[in-house]
Image (cartoon, rainbow, N blue to C red; front, side, top):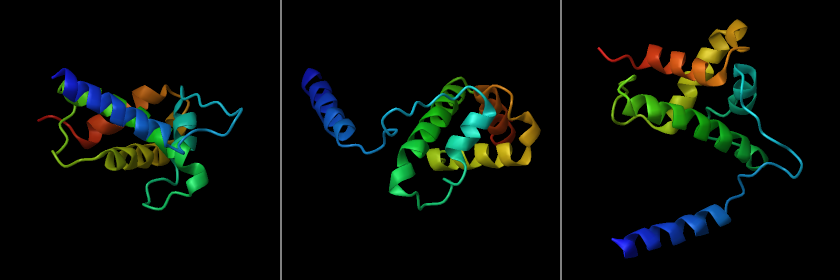
Amino acid sequence: MRRTLLIAVVLACFVAGKSDAAPPPGERVVIEKGNELFDQCKGFTSKKVPAADAWRFTYCQGYISGVADTLSGLKAICPPRKVNSHQYVGVVVDYLTAHPKLRNSAAASLIIIALKEKFPCN
């Protein structure tokens, strides 16, 4: 068990160390409101993300996936088994696009609303 954990940690360090998904020097990412989330996520629902902007999608995807995983674990949403993080991002971006007046609300709250509407538990 310890050996498996050690291997996983070492592999994670290699993957994390090799990532180009970091903001440019001096740029700080803060996602508190829906507008900030939308700015990080818009345009990234396609498969082609420019290399210079990959870090933006990484933040967007990680933020949304964290909320989605929490909701799923709490059985607050019931997505199909094959839903992936890109699809979660698409759902949230679609919601934010359709409801621009709500973007001043808390980002996490907007993610919750969007995912609960798309993946309700019956």
